[in-house]
Image (cartoon, rainbow, N blue to C red; front, side):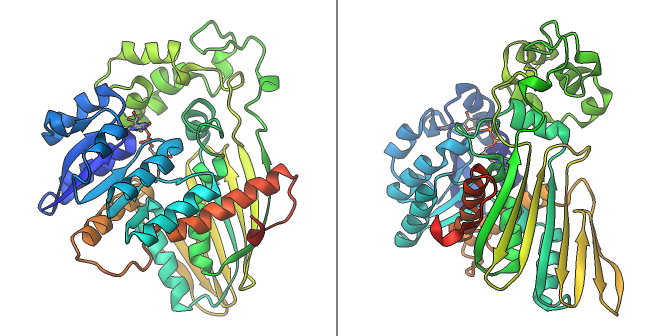
Length: 420
Ligand SMILES: NC(=O)c1ccc[n+]([C@@H]2O[C@H](COP(=O)([O-])OP(=O)(O)OC[C@H]3O[C@@H](n4cnc5c(N)ncnc54)[C@H](O)[C@@H]3O)[C@@H](O)[C@H]2O)c1
């Protein structure tokens, strides 16, 4: 039985723990927990029967015990990933699963790659989409040569207006200085996929984007700092927090459990807890009068050494959350919407080559398969790391995101990857 510790008991950490308990309980178990929130420890420790000695309120206390499990999962917020992972490698952990993004600072993520290599550490980053059936199918078709050599990729990440406002205007990823720019926080997955499909070094990048809509000058007349604080514009505002989180039947139906926990900080919460969270916390603030600064739209163009080009569109304004991708090859093309993949072979067959359920395909399925893959590697059932999202692959996507930000801040100037 392999043992695993988890640092960061929020949405991601608890989801991964659930998969380990639910699907891999014969091979691995959670033995230690660390979170700076006592509430999180109190909520989660009983579920996994973790003794008090194996619960930690700080990473300092956790690492002071030395290596206490075979593997470590790090699912804290973005800004802490570098320091915690560095401490984990220095302490002697050999199997580490780390949430993305690793860091927005190139010297930091590159240092972790070098430290992992020097210390024989398997450091896997949670680029979950690569593990889904849908994206695995795209990769398989590309590798089979059916569509020829890739000429271009046009990929759009439609974040969804609800999700964008929740996470990138009001939530944890609204400020590039406390988290990372949205092109890294949200789209490092997309850049990773594009690089994985094209499979050639990126040579140059250019990018434009900004905060177009979620700014003070766009606040409607009568807007207040808080939706529950006397806002006179709330009835016509699609971003009204009361509708988002309490009254709108559409969101009530879609209101997934973890969002309530995000709002209230509690696993079990009452309606009053949610009202209080909107009155006093981040998620009740006006989307136009907040302190957000991450781009709500951004385009990145990339040129690769093998001649292929790609355009990534980060779009914060769609009705639905979905990624669309058009991959053009010399012999055919792939057109995908996440739940459906169509292939046209020029002068040959056309048709749907893959379909999946909207509830499970993509992210959730990728999450489940990422954990299965990690457990296999940990248990020695799998030795090759082909298509596994180790830190080396992450350095590629993070370099492209960093270059995109340099370009964007210089008004879209071309940036050579070798120059960053
Ligand atoms: N792979 C993906 O597709 C994906 C999707 C969403 C989020 N993420 C990433 O996962 C990470 C976690 O996101 P989340 O939504 O679970 O966040 P969250 O805020 O729900 O959870 C983070 C937890 O870490 C704890 N924490 C923070 N700093 C800590 C520290 N120094 N030591 C110990 N505990 C600490 C917090 O108290 C909290 O319980 C983020 O970096 C996010 O960008 C990845």
